[in-house]
Image (cartoon, rainbow, N blue to C red; front, side):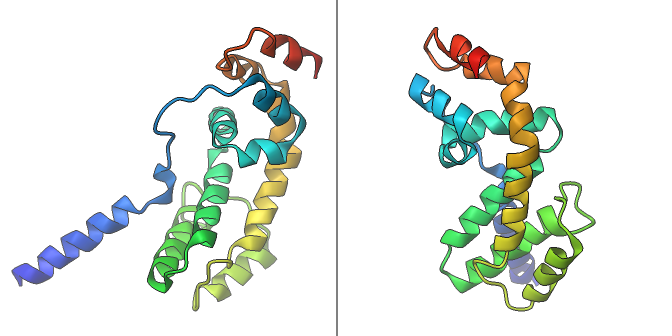
Length: 173
């Protein structure tokens, strides 16, 4: 009996520790002027950069839509996975955290994509969320990113770049 409770406790701790929404930058990094300018011109360049994603995430948090980026990042992590049991676990966590209608962090997916995910849950794969991920990426690119570029918090955030021209560059973009 004691061993069963111990096993249950260990599984619970492992599940808690694998939550994908706990991805945080471990130390503050200051982007270069070239990186900041590249981010202002290309959503893709910003999304490729951990520092760019951190800055964008701060903005999304202020708009109460941080879950979109967190979902996208969780899908990226899932795609890197090759261990079947880890794929099953991560796929389930992504579903519970971002797809389930019961989740407070539910992302906005159309019914066709949502139904495809529901069917894929029977046999999860590392690519099962690709269509949903693309939908959220497109939403962030077309909706959130333009507001991010025009926001005053964005300008304040980009001051983390240790270069006096950043403000001038962004005011002219």
